[in-house]
Image 1: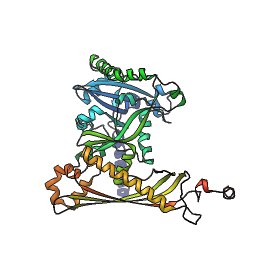
Image 2 (image 1 turned 45 degrees about the horizontal axis):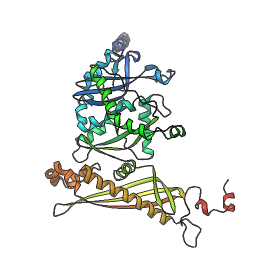
Image 3 (image 1 turned 135 degrees about the vertical axis):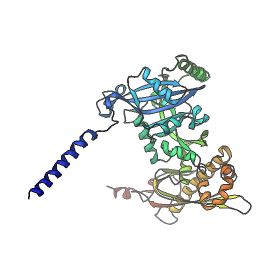
Image 4 (image 1 turned 120 degrees about the vertical axis):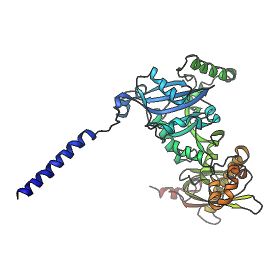
Length: 448
């Protein structure tokens, strides 16, 4: 009995000692107090000569807890320069009272100039630093500077970086943009069979009655346009003359502008080679099987029809011919519903009270087929950039041939013959069985 009791006491003692040992190691060794850091919400990369300009949005810790009382109190904008990204970020501590915390960055924005020079010049730090997370959404700013779009929030969100992050996620509803995170963007660069593509941000004039009623004269508008490059150069000069730090350029208060997330930036390796519009981007997304929602509008002389996309699937086939040429076959199937049908055009089946679904389906397939053919031609002739990833499929099917042509694939792609077939199936017509202009009073009364 005594031996048994002694053994039990030893077990209890061991458990207590184990518990005591765990106490000093139970905390997080590298924890950082929220009030002692500056949380990076968004970062913008621009260049001026050999200098790198880094614009940062720092979120105040109180904003995360919902305690910020105004838009001005929820974040701070800062801009610094350096010979490297890391130096520019560290230079921020010369006037900002917190060390920047990188892990929560939501948006990564490149200027056109930086993107044209090659985005991999700015990736080493983000890929190397242990604190960095590569889950920020990537954009290129078209026709403006990163600092022009950062700090603006026209949506429900008060914090601009969260607004831009939400904007990227919301674009999946219309498929007219590209939502891609930094890690996937970098992977596309390292993939020989597919070229990188990312979203585009632009500043566009707000279409309001007030702004339309206060248009500037044609003469002043021409003068502003002529002096825009000069004023931009003065802003850049201010940054350079101030040494490492520079003041953020102020937006013209006379020009009401809002942010538009539409289109795609097309790269060849790591260099920007051009842009695609919203409908062109949707066509690319169709081919890449990244369309799960959105609309297709077919305009006819007698009607305008809008089909809401419910599902789409593109079957892709890459074939190598005996003469070395390449044929690409695309078979796209779209399932949708009639979202809207306007105009007095004939959309009824002969001697029937039903909508002519075949006519609507054919019109939808026709407009989609044309858009896909046009964007493929553009990427082949103008960009010579395979943003569709056909090279990856060629690699899978012809691995030996791929080793021979992989470094010349974009040239091969630019001369490939592409055949496109589109088939649309209308699954639903909504609450209306007929176009509104064919309904009678009695039929309207049936709806309650």
